[in-house]
Image (cartoon, rainbow, N blue to C red; front, side, top):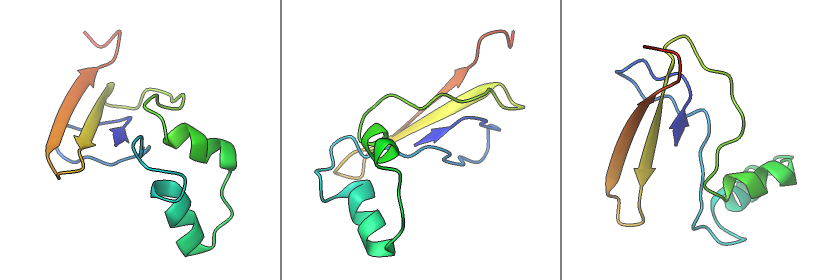
Length: 84
């Protein structure tokens, strides 16, 4: 999960990735279950580990939260360039 404007308190995932999900899991499964029209290029992007481009938010820091297949969580907060 990627919060592109982390406030230091609450993680608001603006991009969510399922890098280990197969073709019928993760976003594909969600889209099928919701019967939603999904941009296939975005689905492919969210299967990877590289974020989509984004503009820095008000707080000038991001948070990346990883939850592995065992439920173990890790959080990394990164200050963006030019924030002192």
